[in-house]
Length: 284
Image (cartoon, rainbow, N blue to C red):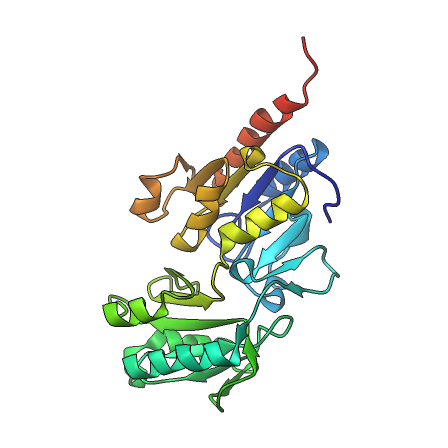
C-alpha cells in the first residue's frame, strides 16, 4: 500500500506487458524490487478482475497496488478488499443492452465490484460464428448465467466480436455516451473485446486520480502498455512506453521497448530509476 508521495511511479499493464501467459519472470521481479528500494512503487493497471488476478503467480512481489478492471476498482494489498470506483445504473444498462440487442451483438453484464468476476450473458450470433464468446463462457462457466433481465447495477458491459468483424458505425455512435475502448481478446488473442464503462472511466482517468490522491505529478509517472485499452494512461503519463508487438498505431505514437518477458518491463524500470531518482539526488 502506498500512503505517501513516492519518488516516482511505474504504472504497467499486466497481460502481454508485464506477464506472459499469466507468469512474471524472475528478471522483472528483480527489477521491481530495485524500484521499490529506491522509493518508486509499481502500480499494475489491468483489465483483469480481482478473482482472475489470484491466478498470476508472484503478482504481489511486483505490485504495490493494483487498479483492476481497467480502472473500475483498486486493490491496495494482497489481502485488501476490492474497492469500486463507479457503476452503471439500471437505466444505463437498459439503454446499452437495447442498443446491443438491436445490433445483434453478443455481450456480458459484469456484476458490481467486488463480485465482478460474476456475470450474465446474452447471445445473438450463431454459436459457430463467435468461438471466443464460447471459450469465455466455458472458461468462466462457474461464474456465468444466462440473461435474466436488467440488474440494478453493473460494473461494465463486455462485447465479444469475432475476428475480422467491426461494430457498426451507428452502434458505436449510440454507445459514445459512455467510456468504450477495445483490446485484443486475452483468450484467443484474435477476437476483439469492447468494454463499456461509466462515462469518464478508463485506465488513464483512474491513474490520474490515484496520482492526484498522493500528490504525484504526471511528470514523475512512466506508463507501460501493449494495447488500445492502455492508450489513455500512456497519453496521460509524463512518459508513455509500449512493448514490442503492440499495435502499429501505438508503436508509431510511443517509444517501443523490448517485448514482454524479454526485457520490456526491465527496460522501463531502468528508465524510471534514471529519470525519477535524479529528482532526489543531492547536488554535486
